[in-house]
Length: 318
Image 1 (cartoon, rainbow, N blue to C red):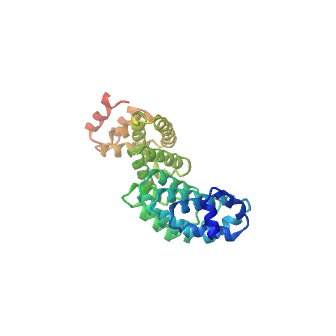
Image 2: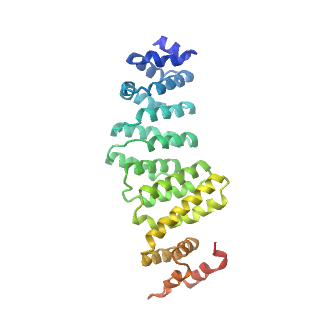
Image 3: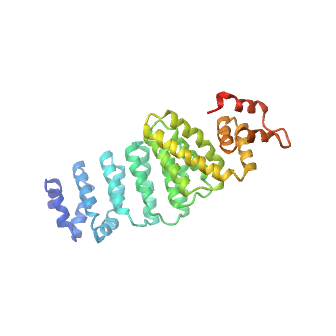
């Protein structure tokens, strides 16, 4: 053990890769060093373990998964951000191509909460990437309860973590509105990295998780994305917002063009909720002001005429 520690701390540290090949004792010694009081020792042990996980026959990965998973997860609570960041890198390699079991998943989720609560965006994005690539087991009620707890949190970092897990499960299970609200919060954040994460999530939802009950909520994104397109400081964000807005428009047009009555109901609901710009966006996309005027063609009182006047004012036109 002492010899392994000396080697890890020496300029020949990466020689450990050669001598550890097939030697389970060396791997276990490195895993024990993860609990060392010295930060540099923990960092170097993590680096060595990460390199060893590239072993093509998977033997070392099997040992680390069996005997080191708990030690690695514990390091997610380390006070040193470098340790947390490096641990996430190692866990990403360790769990790549492995379907995690329920107990390990629950342990990982529990340990990830303090990571999210640090609100260190760079570390947090690494955490999201780990969960994005995670091969999850079938969603159990225990895992579902954990996800629900995260989705209902006040902290945007925790809610986004819950959304990431929900999307990974393959089914939004009636929570599409919550997911879209979370994405909206990311897109309206003052943190450019969270905004980019929001764009990533919205693209993922558009590609893999669309459902009819989402459509009326998607309308709201036209206004949010247009604000980013016109006002974001980052050229990249402006460009991406424009691209994503075009895709949202395509999806909405494809859905509502054969569902005029449903579109009218959505526009009416937006008007009554004083979401005038959103109503205008959808109306212009589907047929302009003639579509809005048809709101008054049917029976009943219809929306407040003052709202129509507000909607048709030139200042509201894009």
